Length: 171
Image (tube, rainbow, N blue to C red; front, top):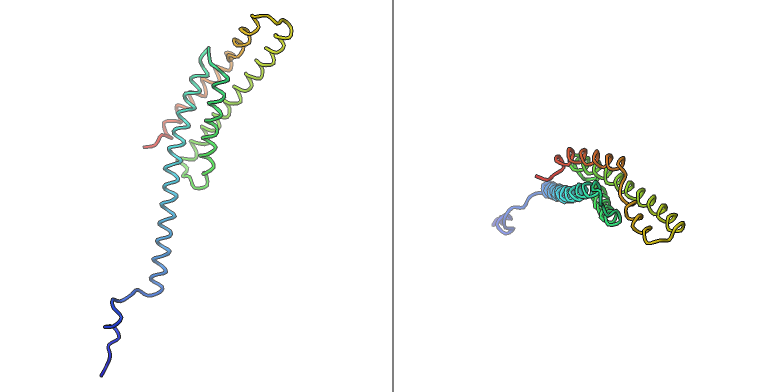
């Protein structure tokens, strides 16, 4: 009597090499899906930060801009761009490059606001020590607005951001 080994084993199984190849392919697909997901998240975060930057640029170009509040918003925007650029190792160039350009513009705006605030604080301090009167507080708030040269620079940043911002918006 002959015993048929295939009848007791059940269905045929793939060989060890086939199973190893399938595991490797599965892991590669999981890694690819993770990179794609990171790019989607990075693209959305970059678009949100770019919108905030555009809003901050418009607010900064206004004559009655609240520079202290704007600086706080701008630091948040810088932080958003830093978070996006922290993933730059896995971001596609179509996501990474606009984020880098916008982050550069954002940092320039932050430095410009800080420079203006530092200049106005030192001038208001010297004004208040020279003549402590009720008018010194009103002159310190008016000195916190940007100069015409700074406004022109902000307008240039706004124009360059709006031309590059359209390519970084998610589809």
